[in-house]
Length: 168
Image (cartoon, rainbow, N blue to C red):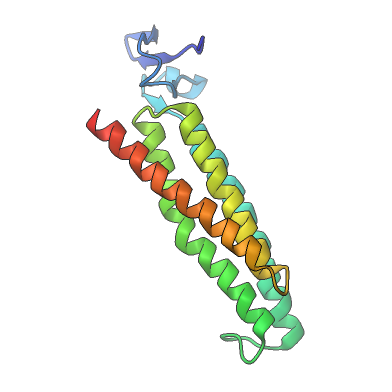
């Protein structure tokens, strides 16, 4: 799609790659031009990881705030709101690492930018729906259900995309 892709080689600083579909994220930067090292960027993985980390920090803050107001330092005690906030935080930490890993693998294998990006966005939106429904609302089963549907569809399709990339 008109994207310039460059490979840095020690003896020849800039070499244009012809197969842009499979190696769309190999780029050069000033720091690796002198060493001749190959630098591979993973922009979708970087963005997904950054946004998930911000969301994790929001959920963490929400748990801490509730713990302080209830004086419960371990577990959730009898506080259902704290229990929900803890689960929203824990649920994100259970699902996010695998999706981040699979997104990075898809990018590294030269996966289609749009497919990987859309699946990453679906996952992020799913996690936002689910986390908001659990942590910021009293009763929102629709948000939890939508969040889990988006999360699971994104995970399944990313697995399929990675396996297709591996085989073909």
